[in-house]
Image (cartoon, rainbow, N blue to C red; front, side):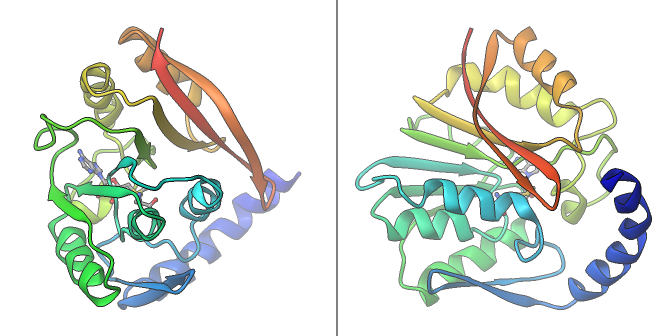
Amino acid sequence: MFKKIKKHIFPVAKFFFDKYTLKQRSYTYEGITVNVSAEVFPPHFTISTKIFLEFIKPLDLKNKNFLELGCGSGIISLFAASKGANVTASDINKIAISALKEASEANEIPLNVVYSDLFENLSNQTFDYIIINPPYYPKAPQNDKERAWFCGENFEYFEKLFAQLPQHLAPNTWMILSEDCEIEHIKKIASNNKLNFELILEKSVLKEKNYIFSIQKS
Ligand SMILES: C[S@@+](CC[C@H](N)C(=O)[O-])C[C@H]1O[C@@H](n2cnc3c(N)ncnc32)[C@H](O)[C@@H]1O
């Protein structure tokens, strides 16, 4: 029933969402502010960023090596760094990278910001935590803005990520996914690369189920 309503609401919501995100908007969490331009994944209305922020809130991250792979606005990275973690924030979007460097200075929260296609420029580092909020709609991205949403017609993002991940896996490697995406297909790509998903959080927001999975070697 809710899915049917959602189908009708979605085009209207998308119209306002697209209009709102055309301008640079600021987003604040726990006193940390990031400026988010139209080319960068907006944490304002999307549920996944907020779920991850709340999930890491009670953790003792002091002196832990923490990677946010595909950091977007970087609000999660800045929050983790404010809790004492040694944070590396990476993204393939150069606008996101340069905005996060500015936000790091403006908030006086140091972190390591790296331009990288997945693990390409992160090869010699190990982490206690790796967190990933991936793009998951199966369509080819046409530009950096779309890379925040689309994983390629044939899930190329996941094919490449899960091929690389076994060499980089952290004791806590976490990925958030929504019931809106093809979770079974994504799990299958992981399992082809000898990776296993274990559910560690299920959270419904506006009747949409979101899941955080821990990824381990199978
Ligand atoms: C859904 S957004 C999540 C952003 C942020 N982690 C958050 O939770 O707000 C996905 C992010 O992954 C980045 N991304 C997509 N493909 C990537 C790749 N091949 N390498 C690194 N980052 C990538 C996008 O640019 C985008 O910032």
